[in-house]
Image 1 (cartoon, rainbow, N blue to C red):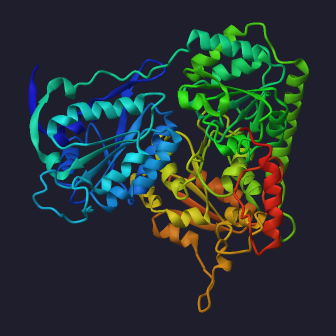
Image 2 (tube, rainbow, N blue to C red; image 1 turned 30 degrees about the vertical axis):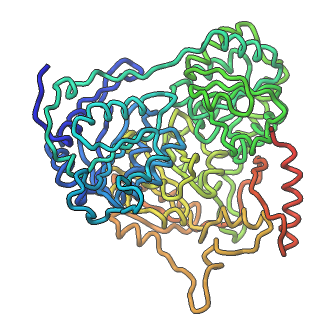
Length: 619
Protein backbone atom coordinates (compact mmCIF):
# COMPACT_ATOMS: atom_id res chain seq x y z
CA UNK A 1 0.00 0.00 0.00
CA UNK A 2 1.43 3.34 -1.08
CA UNK A 3 1.44 6.58 0.88
CA UNK A 4 1.60 10.29 0.18
CA UNK A 5 3.15 12.96 2.34
CA UNK A 6 0.29 15.32 3.15
CA UNK A 7 -0.80 17.63 5.90
CA UNK A 8 -3.84 16.66 7.95
CA UNK A 9 -5.83 19.42 6.24
CA UNK A 10 -4.81 18.26 2.78
CA UNK A 11 -5.70 14.64 3.50
CA UNK A 12 -9.04 15.68 4.98
CA UNK A 13 -9.96 17.79 1.96
CA UNK A 14 -8.94 15.11 -0.52
CA UNK A 15 -10.94 12.42 1.32
CA UNK A 16 -14.05 14.61 1.41
CA UNK A 17 -13.68 15.52 -2.25
CA UNK A 18 -13.40 11.85 -3.23
CA UNK A 19 -16.45 10.64 -1.30
CA UNK A 20 -19.33 9.47 -3.49
CA UNK A 21 -22.79 8.39 -2.34
CA UNK A 22 -25.22 6.12 -4.12
CA UNK A 23 -28.59 7.69 -4.93
CA UNK A 24 -31.93 5.93 -5.13
CA UNK A 25 -31.54 5.41 -8.88
CA UNK A 26 -28.11 3.82 -8.44
CA UNK A 27 -26.13 6.81 -9.65
CA UNK A 28 -23.18 8.18 -7.69
CA UNK A 29 -22.90 11.82 -6.65
CA UNK A 30 -20.35 13.68 -4.53
CA UNK A 31 -21.36 13.22 -0.91
CA UNK A 32 -20.01 16.60 0.13
CA UNK A 33 -21.44 19.43 -1.94
CA UNK A 34 -18.89 21.94 -0.70
CA UNK A 35 -17.50 23.70 2.35
CA UNK A 36 -18.75 26.92 3.86
CA UNK A 37 -15.87 28.75 5.46
CA UNK A 38 -15.15 31.87 7.42
CA UNK A 39 -11.40 31.96 7.95
CA UNK A 40 -9.47 33.11 11.00
CA UNK A 41 -6.16 32.40 12.64
CA UNK A 42 -7.32 28.93 13.64
CA UNK A 43 -8.04 27.61 10.14
CA UNK A 44 -6.81 29.96 7.39
CA UNK A 45 -3.21 28.73 7.21
CA UNK A 46 -3.93 25.01 7.51
CA UNK A 47 -7.38 24.08 6.26
CA UNK A 48 -7.71 27.27 4.23
CA UNK A 49 -4.63 26.49 2.14
CA UNK A 50 -5.80 22.91 1.60
CA UNK A 51 -9.25 24.08 0.49
CA UNK A 52 -7.64 26.48 -1.99
CA UNK A 53 -5.60 23.65 -3.50
CA UNK A 54 -8.69 21.43 -3.74
CA UNK A 55 -11.16 24.10 -4.83
CA UNK A 56 -11.86 22.48 -8.21
CA UNK A 57 -12.99 19.21 -6.62
CA UNK A 58 -14.47 20.60 -3.39
CA UNK A 59 -15.78 24.16 -3.74
CA UNK A 60 -15.50 26.59 -0.86
CA UNK A 61 -18.18 29.20 -0.22
CA UNK A 62 -17.57 32.29 1.86
CA UNK A 63 -20.43 33.29 4.15
CA UNK A 64 -21.13 36.23 6.46
CA UNK A 65 -22.09 34.54 9.73
CA UNK A 66 -20.92 31.21 11.13
CA UNK A 67 -24.32 30.20 12.48
CA UNK A 68 -25.93 31.24 9.21
CA UNK A 69 -23.58 29.22 7.05
CA UNK A 70 -24.15 26.15 9.22
CA UNK A 71 -27.91 26.63 8.87
CA UNK A 72 -27.41 26.75 5.09
CA UNK A 73 -25.39 23.55 5.20
CA UNK A 74 -28.05 21.82 7.29
CA UNK A 75 -30.82 22.96 4.94
CA UNK A 76 -28.78 21.63 2.01
CA UNK A 77 -28.73 18.18 3.62
CA UNK A 78 -32.44 18.33 4.46
CA UNK A 79 -33.30 19.32 0.90
CA UNK A 80 -31.28 16.32 -0.30
CA UNK A 81 -33.18 14.04 2.11
CA UNK A 82 -29.92 13.49 4.03
CA UNK A 83 -28.19 11.90 1.03
CA UNK A 84 -25.70 14.74 0.58
CA UNK A 85 -24.07 17.12 3.03
CA UNK A 86 -21.93 20.22 3.30
CA UNK A 87 -19.11 20.94 5.73
CA UNK A 88 -18.42 24.17 7.59
CA UNK A 89 -15.16 25.48 8.97
CA UNK A 90 -14.40 28.29 11.40
CA UNK A 91 -11.57 29.63 13.49
CA UNK A 92 -11.31 28.92 17.20
CA UNK A 93 -13.21 30.96 19.75
CA UNK A 94 -16.30 32.93 18.66
CA UNK A 95 -16.26 31.44 15.16
CA UNK A 96 -16.56 27.97 16.66
CA UNK A 97 -19.10 28.80 19.35
CA UNK A 98 -21.26 30.54 16.74
CA UNK A 99 -21.80 27.04 15.34
CA UNK A 100 -23.17 25.60 18.56
CA UNK A 101 -26.77 26.73 18.02
CA UNK A 102 -26.72 25.28 14.51
CA UNK A 103 -25.26 22.03 15.84
CA UNK A 104 -28.11 21.77 18.33
CA UNK A 105 -30.59 22.45 15.53
CA UNK A 106 -29.12 19.64 13.41
CA UNK A 107 -29.05 17.31 16.42
CA UNK A 108 -32.73 17.86 17.23
CA UNK A 109 -33.78 17.51 13.60
CA UNK A 110 -31.59 14.42 12.96
CA UNK A 111 -29.77 16.15 10.08
CA UNK A 112 -26.15 15.64 9.00
CA UNK A 113 -23.55 18.40 8.85
CA UNK A 114 -19.78 18.16 9.26
CA UNK A 115 -18.37 20.81 11.60
CA UNK A 116 -14.66 21.56 11.27
CA UNK A 117 -13.79 24.26 13.82
CA UNK A 118 -10.21 25.22 14.43
CA UNK A 119 -8.85 24.54 17.89
CA UNK A 120 -6.00 25.72 20.12
CA UNK A 121 -2.48 24.31 19.75
CA UNK A 122 -2.11 20.63 20.61
CA UNK A 123 1.49 21.39 21.61
CA UNK A 124 0.32 24.09 24.05
CA UNK A 125 3.59 25.88 23.34
CA UNK A 126 2.04 29.35 22.81
CA UNK A 127 -0.84 28.97 25.30
CA UNK A 128 -2.96 30.93 25.88
CA UNK A 129 -3.51 32.00 22.30
CA UNK A 130 -5.94 34.62 21.08
CA UNK A 131 -9.56 33.54 21.74
CA UNK A 132 -8.51 30.56 23.88
CA UNK A 133 -10.90 29.56 26.65
CA UNK A 134 -8.83 28.65 29.70
CA UNK A 135 -10.18 26.36 32.39
CA UNK A 136 -8.40 26.34 35.74
CA UNK A 137 -9.27 22.69 36.42
CA UNK A 138 -9.17 20.98 32.98
CA UNK A 139 -6.08 21.63 30.93
CA UNK A 140 -7.38 19.94 27.79
CA UNK A 141 -10.64 21.90 27.60
CA UNK A 142 -11.35 24.36 24.79
CA UNK A 143 -14.38 26.22 23.48
CA UNK A 144 -15.05 23.28 21.18
CA UNK A 145 -16.07 21.11 24.11
CA UNK A 146 -19.40 22.96 23.82
CA UNK A 147 -20.09 20.69 20.86
CA UNK A 148 -20.06 17.46 22.87
CA UNK A 149 -23.74 17.51 23.96
CA UNK A 150 -25.07 18.81 20.64
CA UNK A 151 -23.33 16.50 18.16
CA UNK A 152 -23.77 12.81 17.41
CA UNK A 153 -20.01 12.38 17.06
CA UNK A 154 -17.23 14.55 18.47
CA UNK A 155 -13.49 14.13 18.18
CA UNK A 156 -10.44 16.33 18.69
CA UNK A 157 -7.49 15.35 16.53
CA UNK A 158 -4.31 15.53 18.60
CA UNK A 159 -2.13 13.59 16.14
CA UNK A 160 -2.24 13.41 12.32
CA UNK A 161 -2.86 9.64 12.23
CA UNK A 162 -6.11 10.08 14.15
CA UNK A 163 -7.70 11.51 11.00
CA UNK A 164 -7.66 8.03 9.45
CA UNK A 165 -10.20 6.74 11.99
CA UNK A 166 -11.97 9.93 13.08
CA UNK A 167 -13.15 11.13 9.67
CA UNK A 168 -14.62 7.77 8.53
CA UNK A 169 -16.38 7.48 11.89
CA UNK A 170 -17.90 10.93 11.45
CA UNK A 171 -19.12 9.98 7.97
CA UNK A 172 -20.50 6.67 9.28
CA UNK A 173 -22.57 8.50 11.89
CA UNK A 174 -23.87 11.03 9.36
CA UNK A 175 -24.93 8.28 6.96
CA UNK A 176 -26.43 5.97 9.57
CA UNK A 177 -30.25 6.22 9.32
CA UNK A 178 -30.73 5.83 13.08
CA UNK A 179 -27.76 7.87 14.36
CA UNK A 180 -27.85 10.58 11.71
CA UNK A 181 -26.92 14.03 12.96
CA UNK A 182 -24.08 16.52 13.19
CA UNK A 183 -20.46 15.44 13.53
CA UNK A 184 -17.63 17.63 14.79
CA UNK A 185 -13.91 17.21 14.23
CA UNK A 186 -12.05 19.84 16.23
CA UNK A 187 -8.78 20.63 14.47
CA UNK A 188 -5.93 22.13 16.52
CA UNK A 189 -4.23 24.59 14.24
CA UNK A 190 -0.77 23.02 14.56
CA UNK A 191 -2.14 19.53 13.83
CA UNK A 192 -3.90 20.85 10.71
CA UNK A 193 -0.55 21.87 9.28
CA UNK A 194 1.43 18.81 10.35
CA UNK A 195 2.39 16.31 7.63
CA UNK A 196 2.17 12.53 7.81
CA UNK A 197 2.33 9.57 5.45
CA UNK A 198 -1.26 9.26 4.33
CA UNK A 199 -2.28 5.86 2.88
CA UNK A 200 -3.42 6.02 -0.74
CA UNK A 201 -6.64 4.11 -0.01
CA UNK A 202 -7.74 6.88 2.39
CA UNK A 203 -7.70 9.21 -0.59
CA UNK A 204 -9.88 6.84 -2.63
CA UNK A 205 -12.72 5.81 -0.31
CA UNK A 206 -15.37 3.30 -1.33
CA UNK A 207 -18.76 4.73 -2.39
CA UNK A 208 -21.22 5.23 0.43
CA UNK A 209 -24.41 3.18 0.32
CA UNK A 210 -27.17 4.10 2.73
CA UNK A 211 -28.79 1.19 4.55
CA UNK A 212 -32.49 0.35 4.68
CA UNK A 213 -32.88 -1.77 7.82
CA UNK A 214 -35.42 -4.58 7.54
CA UNK A 215 -37.86 -5.24 10.40
CA UNK A 216 -37.47 -8.11 12.83
CA UNK A 217 -39.97 -10.76 11.72
CA UNK A 218 -41.49 -11.32 15.15
CA UNK A 219 -41.84 -7.58 15.67
CA UNK A 220 -43.43 -7.25 12.23
CA UNK A 221 -45.92 -10.03 13.00
CA UNK A 222 -46.97 -8.37 16.26
CA UNK A 223 -47.31 -4.98 14.55
CA UNK A 224 -49.43 -6.48 11.77
CA UNK A 225 -51.65 -8.24 14.31
CA UNK A 226 -52.21 -4.96 16.13
CA UNK A 227 -52.97 -3.11 12.90
CA UNK A 228 -55.43 -5.75 11.67
CA UNK A 229 -57.38 -5.38 14.92
CA UNK A 230 -57.97 -1.68 14.25
CA UNK A 231 -61.22 -0.37 12.79
CA UNK A 232 -60.31 3.33 12.85
CA UNK A 233 -56.58 3.48 12.09
CA UNK A 234 -54.79 6.77 11.56
CA UNK A 235 -51.29 7.43 10.18
CA UNK A 236 -49.04 10.22 11.40
CA UNK A 237 -46.36 10.82 8.74
CA UNK A 238 -43.12 12.25 10.11
CA UNK A 239 -39.86 13.38 8.60
CA UNK A 240 -38.64 9.81 8.35
CA UNK A 241 -41.09 9.25 5.49
CA UNK A 242 -39.30 11.91 3.45
CA UNK A 243 -35.77 10.86 4.38
CA UNK A 244 -36.59 7.27 3.46
CA UNK A 245 -38.15 8.48 0.19
CA UNK A 246 -41.21 6.54 1.26
CA UNK A 247 -43.90 8.82 -0.17
CA UNK A 248 -45.03 6.30 -2.80
CA UNK A 249 -45.09 3.49 -0.23
CA UNK A 250 -47.19 5.65 2.10
CA UNK A 251 -49.62 6.51 -0.67
CA UNK A 252 -50.00 2.85 -1.65
CA UNK A 253 -50.48 1.84 1.98
CA UNK A 254 -53.24 4.33 2.71
CA UNK A 255 -55.04 3.64 -0.58
CA UNK A 256 -54.86 -0.14 -0.22
CA UNK A 257 -56.04 -0.17 3.38
CA UNK A 258 -58.29 2.91 3.47
CA UNK A 259 -56.24 4.67 6.15
CA UNK A 260 -56.20 8.47 6.49
CA UNK A 261 -52.90 10.31 6.87
CA UNK A 262 -51.90 13.47 8.72
CA UNK A 263 -48.50 15.10 8.46
CA UNK A 264 -46.14 16.54 11.06
CA UNK A 265 -44.12 19.68 10.38
CA UNK A 266 -41.16 17.51 9.34
CA UNK A 267 -43.37 15.11 7.38
CA UNK A 268 -45.46 17.61 5.43
CA UNK A 269 -45.18 16.95 1.67
CA UNK A 270 -45.04 13.18 2.25
CA UNK A 271 -48.33 13.09 0.33
CA UNK A 272 -49.48 15.65 -2.20
CA UNK A 273 -51.77 18.24 -0.58
CA UNK A 274 -54.72 17.14 -2.76
CA UNK A 275 -54.55 13.39 -2.07
CA UNK A 276 -58.03 12.24 -0.92
CA UNK A 277 -56.61 10.61 2.23
CA UNK A 278 -54.42 13.57 3.23
CA UNK A 279 -56.10 15.26 6.20
CA UNK A 280 -53.37 17.88 6.39
CA UNK A 281 -51.42 19.04 9.40
CA UNK A 282 -51.55 17.26 12.76
CA UNK A 283 -51.28 18.62 16.29
CA UNK A 284 -51.02 22.06 17.84
CA UNK A 285 -50.66 23.59 14.38
CA UNK A 286 -52.99 21.01 12.87
CA UNK A 287 -56.10 21.09 10.74
CA UNK A 288 -59.56 20.39 12.18
CA UNK A 289 -59.86 17.40 9.84
CA UNK A 290 -56.69 15.75 11.12
CA UNK A 291 -57.15 16.55 14.79
CA UNK A 292 -60.81 15.49 14.91
CA UNK A 293 -60.09 12.09 13.43
CA UNK A 294 -56.96 11.70 15.59
CA UNK A 295 -59.18 12.06 18.67
CA UNK A 296 -61.51 9.33 17.40
CA UNK A 297 -58.91 6.87 16.10
CA UNK A 298 -58.50 3.52 17.82
CA UNK A 299 -54.93 3.07 16.57
CA UNK A 300 -52.28 5.60 15.52
CA UNK A 301 -49.46 4.41 13.29
CA UNK A 302 -46.63 6.93 13.67
CA UNK A 303 -44.20 6.58 10.76
CA UNK A 304 -40.81 8.25 11.08
CA UNK A 305 -41.93 10.65 13.80
CA UNK A 306 -40.17 11.43 17.06
CA UNK A 307 -43.60 12.36 18.52
CA UNK A 308 -42.72 15.90 19.51
CA UNK A 309 -45.19 17.72 21.74
CA UNK A 310 -46.52 19.85 18.88
CA UNK A 311 -47.42 16.65 17.02
CA UNK A 312 -49.12 14.94 19.96
CA UNK A 313 -50.73 17.96 21.63
CA UNK A 314 -48.34 17.40 24.53
CA UNK A 315 -49.46 13.74 24.43
CA UNK A 316 -53.11 14.58 24.92
CA UNK A 317 -54.40 14.64 21.33
CA UNK A 318 -54.66 10.90 20.63
CA UNK A 319 -54.02 9.52 24.10
CA UNK A 320 -57.08 7.27 23.76
CA UNK A 321 -55.59 5.33 20.83
CA UNK A 322 -53.21 2.43 20.81
CA UNK A 323 -49.84 3.51 19.44
CA UNK A 324 -47.69 1.72 16.87
CA UNK A 325 -44.41 3.45 16.01
CA UNK A 326 -42.56 2.53 12.83
CA UNK A 327 -39.15 4.14 13.12
CA UNK A 328 -35.57 3.43 12.18
CA UNK A 329 -34.44 4.79 15.58
CA UNK A 330 -35.29 2.37 18.44
CA UNK A 331 -35.57 5.14 21.04
CA UNK A 332 -38.17 6.95 18.93
CA UNK A 333 -40.01 3.73 18.21
CA UNK A 334 -40.37 2.92 21.92
CA UNK A 335 -41.73 6.29 23.05
CA UNK A 336 -44.87 6.55 25.15
CA UNK A 337 -45.37 2.84 25.61
CA UNK A 338 -46.27 2.19 22.01
CA UNK A 339 -45.55 -1.01 20.14
CA UNK A 340 -42.32 -0.73 18.15
CA UNK A 341 -41.52 -1.65 14.58
CA UNK A 342 -37.86 -0.74 14.09
CA UNK A 343 -36.93 -0.48 10.43
CA UNK A 344 -36.66 1.81 7.44
CA UNK A 345 -39.91 3.67 6.75
CA UNK A 346 -40.28 2.59 3.13
CA UNK A 347 -39.40 -1.01 3.80
CA UNK A 348 -41.58 -1.09 6.90
CA UNK A 349 -44.67 0.25 5.16
CA UNK A 350 -44.24 -2.25 2.34
CA UNK A 351 -43.72 -5.21 4.68
CA UNK A 352 -46.57 -4.15 6.96
CA UNK A 353 -48.94 -3.76 4.02
CA UNK A 354 -48.04 -7.21 2.75
CA UNK A 355 -48.55 -8.70 6.22
CA UNK A 356 -52.01 -7.09 6.35
CA UNK A 357 -53.14 -8.28 2.93
CA UNK A 358 -56.94 -8.10 2.65
CA UNK A 359 -57.39 -5.91 5.71
CA UNK A 360 -59.00 -2.48 5.43
CA UNK A 361 -60.23 0.13 7.83
CA UNK A 362 -63.99 0.35 8.32
CA UNK A 363 -65.56 1.80 5.18
CA UNK A 364 -67.38 4.44 7.19
CA UNK A 365 -64.08 5.61 8.69
CA UNK A 366 -62.42 5.88 5.29
CA UNK A 367 -65.40 7.76 3.86
CA UNK A 368 -65.49 10.09 6.83
CA UNK A 369 -61.79 10.86 6.36
CA UNK A 370 -62.22 11.59 2.64
CA UNK A 371 -65.13 13.91 3.34
CA UNK A 372 -63.21 15.75 6.08
CA UNK A 373 -60.13 16.10 3.87
CA UNK A 374 -62.17 17.56 1.00
CA UNK A 375 -63.92 20.01 3.32
CA UNK A 376 -60.59 21.17 4.71
CA UNK A 377 -59.15 21.72 1.23
CA UNK A 378 -62.15 23.91 0.43
CA UNK A 379 -61.67 25.81 3.68
CA UNK A 380 -57.97 26.39 2.92
CA UNK A 381 -58.92 27.88 -0.44
CA UNK A 382 -61.40 30.15 1.32
CA UNK A 383 -58.95 31.30 4.00
CA UNK A 384 -56.10 32.00 1.59
CA UNK A 385 -58.13 33.95 -0.96
CA UNK A 386 -60.23 36.10 1.36
CA UNK A 387 -59.74 39.85 1.22
CA UNK A 388 -58.56 41.61 4.41
CA UNK A 389 -61.44 42.88 6.51
CA UNK A 390 -62.08 46.62 6.20
CA UNK A 391 -59.09 48.70 7.22
CA UNK A 392 -57.53 45.82 9.14
CA UNK A 393 -54.02 44.77 8.21
CA UNK A 394 -53.80 41.41 6.41
CA UNK A 395 -52.82 38.30 8.31
CA UNK A 396 -50.63 35.39 7.34
CA UNK A 397 -53.23 33.27 5.51
CA UNK A 398 -53.92 36.03 3.01
CA UNK A 399 -50.20 36.54 2.44
CA UNK A 400 -49.71 32.80 1.90
CA UNK A 401 -52.47 32.78 -0.71
CA UNK A 402 -50.95 35.71 -2.58
CA UNK A 403 -47.52 34.08 -2.62
CA UNK A 404 -48.94 30.77 -3.81
CA UNK A 405 -51.24 32.21 -6.46
CA UNK A 406 -48.50 34.36 -8.00
CA UNK A 407 -47.11 31.21 -9.61
CA UNK A 408 -47.95 30.68 -13.25
CA UNK A 409 -48.50 26.96 -12.68
CA UNK A 410 -50.89 25.51 -10.15
CA UNK A 411 -50.27 23.61 -7.94
CA UNK A 412 -46.97 25.37 -7.42
CA UNK A 413 -43.66 23.56 -7.31
CA UNK A 414 -42.13 26.26 -5.11
CA UNK A 415 -40.18 25.33 -2.01
CA UNK A 416 -41.33 27.38 0.97
CA UNK A 417 -38.82 27.81 3.82
CA UNK A 418 -39.63 28.89 7.37
CA UNK A 419 -38.71 28.16 10.97
CA UNK A 420 -40.23 30.12 13.83
CA UNK A 421 -43.02 32.37 15.04
CA UNK A 422 -46.59 32.48 13.75
CA UNK A 423 -45.79 31.39 10.23
CA UNK A 424 -45.04 27.70 10.98
CA UNK A 425 -48.60 27.22 12.23
CA UNK A 426 -50.16 29.00 9.26
CA UNK A 427 -47.95 27.30 6.68
CA UNK A 428 -48.41 23.87 8.26
CA UNK A 429 -52.16 24.25 7.86
CA UNK A 430 -52.37 26.23 4.63
CA UNK A 431 -49.36 25.66 2.34
CA UNK A 432 -50.04 23.36 -0.58
CA UNK A 433 -47.04 21.06 -1.01
CA UNK A 434 -47.24 19.21 -4.30
CA UNK A 435 -44.01 17.25 -4.05
CA UNK A 436 -41.59 15.85 -1.45
CA UNK A 437 -39.48 18.56 0.13
CA UNK A 438 -41.52 21.45 -1.25
CA UNK A 439 -42.31 22.31 2.36
CA UNK A 440 -39.11 23.01 4.26
CA UNK A 441 -39.81 23.81 7.89
CA UNK A 442 -37.27 23.79 10.72
CA UNK A 443 -39.59 23.16 13.63
CA UNK A 444 -37.62 20.75 15.75
CA UNK A 445 -35.52 23.54 17.26
CA UNK A 446 -37.79 26.35 16.00
CA UNK A 447 -34.72 28.50 15.57
CA UNK A 448 -35.35 32.14 14.78
CA UNK A 449 -32.83 33.22 12.16
CA UNK A 450 -32.75 29.90 10.29
CA UNK A 451 -35.08 31.07 7.54
CA UNK A 452 -32.93 33.09 5.14
CA UNK A 453 -29.77 31.03 5.64
CA UNK A 454 -31.83 27.86 5.29
CA UNK A 455 -33.33 29.20 2.08
CA UNK A 456 -29.82 29.66 0.69
CA UNK A 457 -28.99 26.03 1.48
CA UNK A 458 -32.19 24.82 -0.19
CA UNK A 459 -31.46 26.89 -3.31
CA UNK A 460 -27.97 25.39 -3.51
CA UNK A 461 -29.51 21.92 -3.31
CA UNK A 462 -32.45 22.62 -5.63
CA UNK A 463 -31.40 25.37 -8.05
CA UNK A 464 -34.16 24.47 -10.51
CA UNK A 465 -36.96 25.38 -8.07
CA UNK A 466 -38.17 28.74 -6.84
CA UNK A 467 -37.21 29.01 -3.18
CA UNK A 468 -39.46 31.32 -1.18
CA UNK A 469 -38.46 32.26 2.34
CA UNK A 470 -41.31 33.46 4.51
CA UNK A 471 -40.06 35.17 7.64
CA UNK A 472 -41.34 37.45 10.37
CA UNK A 473 -39.69 40.73 11.23
CA UNK A 474 -38.33 39.30 14.49
CA UNK A 475 -36.48 36.44 12.80
CA UNK A 476 -35.31 38.74 10.01
CA UNK A 477 -33.64 41.02 12.54
CA UNK A 478 -31.96 38.09 14.26
CA UNK A 479 -30.16 36.87 11.14
CA UNK A 480 -30.28 38.35 7.66
CA UNK A 481 -26.66 38.47 6.54
CA UNK A 482 -26.96 35.52 4.17
CA UNK A 483 -29.03 37.74 1.88
CA UNK A 484 -25.67 39.21 0.95
CA UNK A 485 -24.26 35.69 0.53
CA UNK A 486 -27.11 34.71 -1.81
CA UNK A 487 -26.41 37.76 -3.96
CA UNK A 488 -22.66 37.10 -3.95
CA UNK A 489 -23.12 33.45 -4.93
CA UNK A 490 -25.83 34.16 -7.51
CA UNK A 491 -28.33 31.91 -5.69
CA UNK A 492 -31.61 33.76 -6.08
CA UNK A 493 -34.12 33.77 -3.25
CA UNK A 494 -37.50 35.41 -2.83
CA UNK A 495 -37.80 36.58 0.78
CA UNK A 496 -41.23 37.66 2.02
CA UNK A 497 -41.02 39.58 5.30
CA UNK A 498 -44.25 39.77 7.30
CA UNK A 499 -43.81 42.77 9.57
CA UNK A 500 -46.12 42.57 12.58
CA UNK A 501 -43.82 44.83 14.61
CA UNK A 502 -42.51 42.38 17.12
CA UNK A 503 -42.73 38.82 18.34
CA UNK A 504 -46.41 38.40 17.53
CA UNK A 505 -46.58 34.66 18.19
CA UNK A 506 -45.18 34.87 21.71
CA UNK A 507 -47.24 38.00 22.34
CA UNK A 508 -50.40 35.96 21.73
CA UNK A 509 -49.12 33.08 23.87
CA UNK A 510 -48.35 35.54 26.63
CA UNK A 511 -51.86 36.97 26.49
CA UNK A 512 -53.47 33.51 26.29
CA UNK A 513 -51.51 32.53 29.40
CA UNK A 514 -53.03 35.43 31.31
CA UNK A 515 -49.95 37.61 31.03
CA UNK A 516 -49.85 41.35 30.45
CA UNK A 517 -48.56 42.93 27.26
CA UNK A 518 -44.85 42.95 28.00
CA UNK A 519 -41.54 42.83 26.10
CA UNK A 520 -42.84 41.28 22.85
CA UNK A 521 -44.39 43.84 20.50
CA UNK A 522 -42.03 46.70 19.74
CA UNK A 523 -44.49 49.35 20.86
CA UNK A 524 -44.70 47.68 24.28
CA UNK A 525 -40.92 47.84 24.73
CA UNK A 526 -40.21 51.58 24.61
CA UNK A 527 -38.73 52.77 27.92
CA UNK A 528 -38.93 56.30 29.24
CA UNK A 529 -36.67 58.41 27.10
CA UNK A 530 -36.76 55.93 24.22
CA UNK A 531 -38.66 56.15 20.97
CA UNK A 532 -40.69 53.70 18.88
CA UNK A 533 -38.65 51.58 16.49
CA UNK A 534 -38.85 52.63 12.85
CA UNK A 535 -37.31 49.87 10.73
CA UNK A 536 -37.22 50.00 6.94
CA UNK A 537 -36.66 46.37 6.00
CA UNK A 538 -36.72 47.05 2.27
CA UNK A 539 -34.00 49.68 2.57
CA UNK A 540 -31.97 47.32 4.72
CA UNK A 541 -32.27 44.49 2.19
CA UNK A 542 -31.19 46.81 -0.62
CA UNK A 543 -28.10 47.70 1.42
CA UNK A 544 -27.19 43.98 1.34
CA UNK A 545 -27.41 43.93 -2.46
CA UNK A 546 -30.91 42.54 -2.96
CA UNK A 547 -33.77 44.07 -4.87
CA UNK A 548 -36.47 45.03 -2.38
CA UNK A 549 -39.76 46.84 -1.97
CA UNK A 550 -42.35 47.47 0.70
CA UNK A 551 -45.77 46.61 -0.70
CA UNK A 552 -48.97 48.30 0.36
CA UNK A 553 -51.35 45.34 0.51
CA UNK A 554 -52.01 41.76 -0.55
CA UNK A 555 -52.84 42.65 -4.15
CA UNK A 556 -49.60 44.60 -4.44
CA UNK A 557 -47.72 41.67 -2.93
CA UNK A 558 -49.08 39.29 -5.54
CA UNK A 559 -48.00 41.66 -8.34
CA UNK A 560 -44.57 42.08 -6.76
CA UNK A 561 -44.23 38.29 -6.47
CA UNK A 562 -44.79 37.98 -10.22
CA UNK A 563 -41.96 40.46 -10.82
CA UNK A 564 -39.72 38.67 -8.32
CA UNK A 565 -40.30 35.34 -10.04
CA UNK A 566 -39.23 36.87 -13.37
CA UNK A 567 -36.05 38.31 -11.85
CA UNK A 568 -32.72 36.52 -11.56
CA UNK A 569 -31.75 38.39 -8.39
CA UNK A 570 -32.63 37.86 -4.77
CA UNK A 571 -35.70 39.93 -3.99
CA UNK A 572 -37.04 40.93 -0.57
CA UNK A 573 -40.72 41.89 -0.31
CA UNK A 574 -42.04 43.45 2.88
CA UNK A 575 -45.70 43.63 3.90
CA UNK A 576 -47.27 44.92 7.11
CA UNK A 577 -49.43 42.33 8.89
CA UNK A 578 -51.43 42.16 12.10
CA UNK A 579 -49.96 40.47 15.19
CA UNK A 580 -53.39 39.73 16.65
CA UNK A 581 -55.13 37.49 14.15
CA UNK A 582 -54.40 33.87 13.19
CA UNK A 583 -56.35 31.03 11.60
CA UNK A 584 -58.77 29.85 14.27
CA UNK A 585 -59.57 26.54 12.56
CA UNK A 586 -57.92 23.49 14.05
CA UNK A 587 -55.22 23.35 16.65
CA UNK A 588 -55.20 21.63 20.02
CA UNK A 589 -53.83 22.05 23.52
CA UNK A 590 -50.12 22.55 24.04
CA UNK A 591 -48.60 22.36 27.50
CA UNK A 592 -47.04 25.61 28.66
CA UNK A 593 -46.53 25.59 32.41
CA UNK A 594 -48.47 28.39 34.10
CA UNK A 595 -47.79 29.94 37.52
CA UNK A 596 -49.59 28.37 40.48
CA UNK A 597 -49.59 31.77 42.20
CA UNK A 598 -50.01 35.17 40.52
CA UNK A 599 -51.33 38.65 41.25
CA UNK A 600 -53.25 38.52 37.98
CA UNK A 601 -56.75 37.00 37.93
CA UNK A 602 -56.23 36.18 34.24
CA UNK A 603 -53.31 33.92 35.14
CA UNK A 604 -55.39 32.10 37.78
CA UNK A 605 -58.10 31.44 35.18
CA UNK A 606 -55.55 30.16 32.68
CA UNK A 607 -54.00 27.96 35.37
CA UNK A 608 -57.34 26.31 36.09
CA UNK A 609 -57.83 25.51 32.40
CA UNK A 610 -54.29 24.16 32.33
CA UNK A 611 -55.08 21.73 35.16
CA UNK A 612 -58.10 20.41 33.28
CA UNK A 613 -56.11 19.82 30.11
CA UNK A 614 -53.32 18.07 31.99
CA UNK A 615 -55.73 15.28 32.85
CA UNK A 616 -56.00 14.30 29.18
CA UNK A 617 -52.31 13.47 28.75
CA UNK A 618 -51.00 10.01 27.92
CA UNK A 619 -48.93 8.77 30.85
